[in-house]
Amino acid sequence: MRTVLAAVVASSLLVAVASAPSGATDTPGAAKPRTVDGWSTTTPAQAGFLPRRLSRVAADAKAEQSSCLAVVRDGKLVADWNWGTPRTAARQVFSVTKSIASALVGIAVRDGDLDVDDPVADYVPSWRGTDSADVTVRDLLSNTSGRFWSVDSDYTQLTHAPDRTAYAVGLEQQFPRGTVWAYNNAAIQVLDRVIRRATGRATYRFATDRLFEPLGMTHTFMTRDQSGHSTNVYFGAFTTCLDLARFAQLYLRRGVVGGERIVSKAWVRQSTGRSSSELNAAYGYLWWVNRYGALRGSLDPVDEDGQPLETHVGRLVPEAAGSLYSAIGLGGQIAMVDPGSRTIVVRLGPSNGDGFGLRDAARVVTWADAAATSPARRAGAAGGSPRR
Image (cartoon, rainbow, N blue to C red; front, side, top):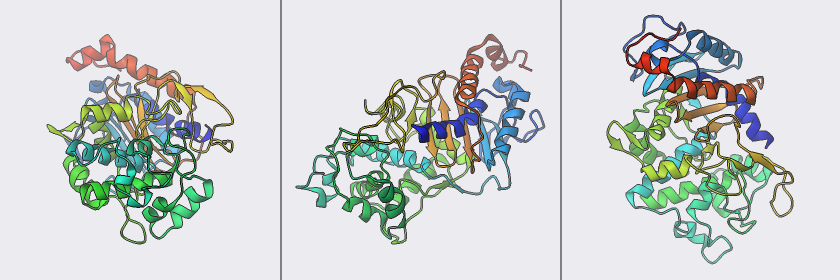
């Protein structure tokens, strides 16, 4: 639980931005271009934000060693900042890559190339006749596969393996599927083999052609391991704040971009609109969600049966809407979506660990939802007096 809470603490300043006003430059209210890196822009007042709140949040983001911060509402860029790095320079986003991998599975599902209830053994023949024979694609997406996990395996051996997919596929079954929840990087890496076998294309090429290019994510790419054969799907994507906002926008718009459907409404709902397992209410299909129930973190201590030594019940951000969901990576990389206020907040860069607390995050998210439906917000959207 500590690791999940740390991620949320590091990202809470981003949640704060979802309640802040903004402008597409460092000075809210300054003259703005019509578009920024392909995004139509709006002003803080038009978006229903208080400019001075945004200025404070941006200052906090800078203090957190952020490299970029972006706020989008109703499909328009409200503000973005870049510190020490050009706006279009791609940056490592670590486990945010997992949510991208989830989308790739969703595309393959919509194409009819696979089904989440397919046994992984359909795509990994070496699992046939073994204890892993009944593990499904859904189990990999939900982190309930029961495949072997240890700190050394997941964070050292896997990382240093010349062929990461081969290493992940070659591990053993540790527990029966569906009986334990583990933030299992190696199990997720197996999705590289699944996607490649199901679609007939290398995962990184499939991502570029079917996801990044249609979304206009021109500064985004997935990386390969030392072997050159395997695409990194549990980490390793490089992107920008504004490209990552495009990815989040795909989910906020229920799978459609520019009139083109990329993933189904059902996939968006299954991935981000509910918990994928009773074992962890905070997890969808490789996305972190804000549903109520038993909570698990990536490095919770467990017993010999893989069960948590401590039980936590609640929501990741207790006072925020249950519909909130996020793609989260090491060091406070985050793309956060608040469907209630139609707000997206993206923050990239290292974190020094001194971010807002959970109470701050809950307070500002609640304010964002309230601002989105307030009479003043509606008046501003209709051309009435802007908020100051």
